[in-house]
Image 1 (tube, rainbow, N blue to C red):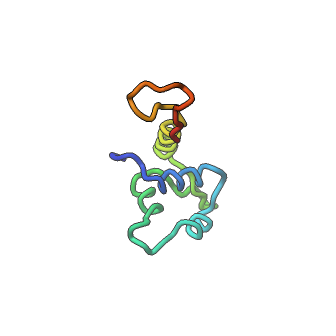
Image 2 (cartoon, helix red, strand yellow):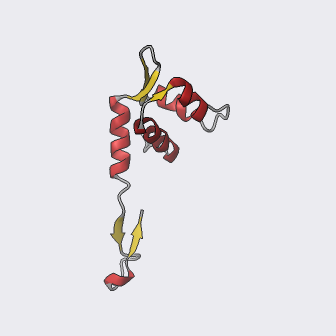
Image 3 (cartoon, rainbow, N blue to C red):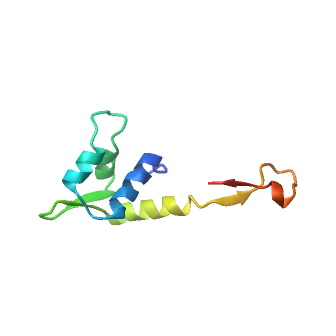
Length: 96
């Protein structure tokens, strides 16, 4: 994945990682005919998910787990000043 994953891709990967999902459940929840929301197709093409075995379970690949971990690590809330001007600590903002 050359660019940072989209928010919908992170949501999809989190959904898959949350608990065992079948192909049928995944298609019911995520398939779309809209070419602008092709998260399932993109995840397969980018080798982020795979369909395993006779139960047709949808799971994250090693690459998918790495992308999700990296996205989650970069999404920690951090206290930052709103500007470079020095302010008292009580005026700091939180960005999430």
